[in-house]
Length: 502
Ligand SMILES: [Zn+2]
Image (cartoon, rainbow, N blue to C red; front, side, top):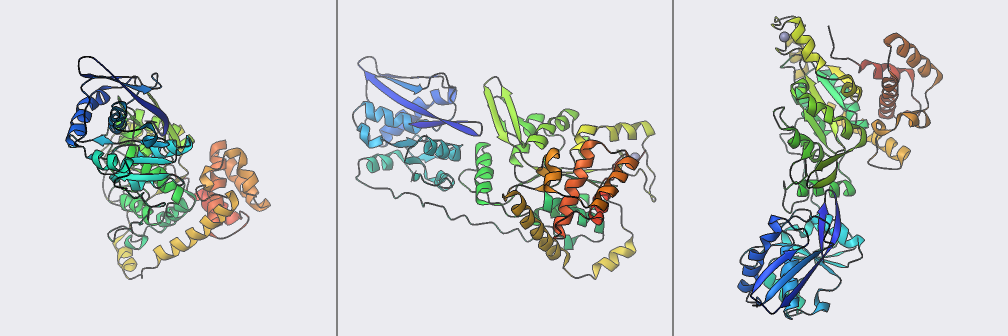
């Protein structure tokens, strides 16, 4: 038995072999692609180089169910074992109750595979008790509990194990996940001078996982602010570690490692739509999925092609992305926090007191209009970042390192409150559906009155109205307050600094 990973899911595959008299040959049927056809040569060499016998008969391999397209090199191992079984070198009971996956080298060694976690999940769901896969992937597969994981280094070693001549010890039940400490060169709030409103906004965004856009002239530290986010976000939970590792393994970005830190992805605006959204001949996760449960940082947001920005709407709304291509459909998670930056105009100096903008009004308008209303609608916080006077820099220089510690403390308070409210450690205020906001977030009468007045004065859309409530909820949570008070609503209203300035 083996498994076909399909997008983020997987399905059990039966690998059968039949050998009969005839001209020695090997044929693989069952909708395999080129990689699978090439398995013939790898399997033949691997078997003979493992000092096992490759039958001089006509061999037919069938991968069932036949209608499911199959791709990947991890069928090498089950194909080799089915040939050994068809030639009576292995008995059926020796491979029973087990699932196999692994790419074979010509010398019979086993190489890293994609989709190790999908394979382990499918094996467990289908009721198998044991999974054999390359040793390098065994820690990843071990993230799935209640399944015996046996990491194998070579076909020969596995053969001796199945014959009970040389037993391979199963991988640990739960692999020791060593969390990577944030690197010492990571940016903290204490590294950023001035920009108090922006830092406060970052704290709120991290606590409630709100999408945020920083806009202002170049050289104001917008990028640095975005980078400081990683040090503020909560640690990944055990379940989140599985999902993040799974998607990075599927993309081929990592072999056997386990990812324990929230991803921070910063694709350049020249990256292709497929690279950002996902897809390709064999649907592959893109940057939006690699940023799953982490941050998608888009520097200079208006520079990204319109088609890319529009494609972000589905993942921002639903937390996943559907990719369909001729070779099949795939659904990948894409629940990221969007952090964007933008200049006020193409040259960057529109509205700057010290430097003159060289852009024509029509060019400025076109630049700012590249962000469509529906996309801006999905960004909870818009924060203007201005250049700080030199005098302020000197004052800020003498402050001690306490902002980061304070921010982390209040974020923790807000996380605990959200955890209790939603009975989940992966659910945040920003994710509440508009219709549910009033259920979770009672507003004091005065707060409601303030919000109503603002809605009328600023002519806010219904979506904006609920966004302000969600944001005010996070601000109240940072305050450890049960109800949303007028001061919380007032602060939430400040983060509606639309970049449109003309
Ligand atoms: Zn300009």
